[in-house]
Length: 148
Length: 148
Image (cartoon, each protein chain N blue to C red):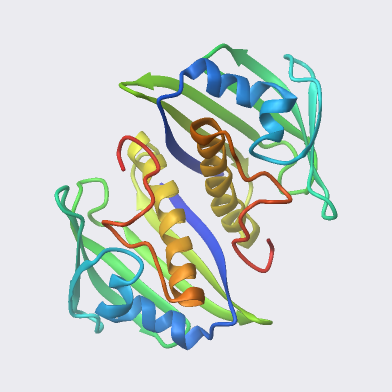
């Protein structure tokens, strides 16, 4: 089992504001994909779509405001189904630190390499949204390769 | 043992050009850090510095032009010493695909999370250098957190 790990710091933004961007449809749509729907409460399912290539359904498995958010992937690419995504937030000086992990990958294949870089770019989109008011969600996300 | 993995695609650039940016002091200085010195041949040591916080010495352990580059970290932060960094390049349509791995981490600690995101941002700097002529090496690198 191999994991994707990331860390960013969001400057002059509280953990509460970051938590909101991870737990509300409006917040998520501001940095990950315009096409976000669903129920962000524990047990609910959030639906993220990236037309025309598909997307992910995430069941919210844990919420501990404003410190922790955890999702389990219940639909999407075969490599993603059953994996878990954890977000840990904490204040450090003038920053909110975001520790991200996407765990439970069965193989460190080329698609996982891609998803690692792409998650990094979306975390920078989350940071930009919160610091400047403008994120880069799909379809305005950063193109990192032939796989978008 | 846990690894940092990334994948980017460099558009309309040959594997030979990407290889050059990974194996010459001038190329490396264009996307990673201005303060790059040393010997990029097999067995040589490349020195990357990020004033004022230190840096890394990498021994070049394999070169297979224009497909593969491998380094071993021989000096730098304790977590990095003894780890290996591999670059695999291949043409795919109009892109050169770069598969990156930084292997041999002993613990998936917070510093590793940071390095994963930071490597992703430097791979985007490599891509930008080759596609546009302008990378974002230190000290003009993207600030991702309180740890820079």
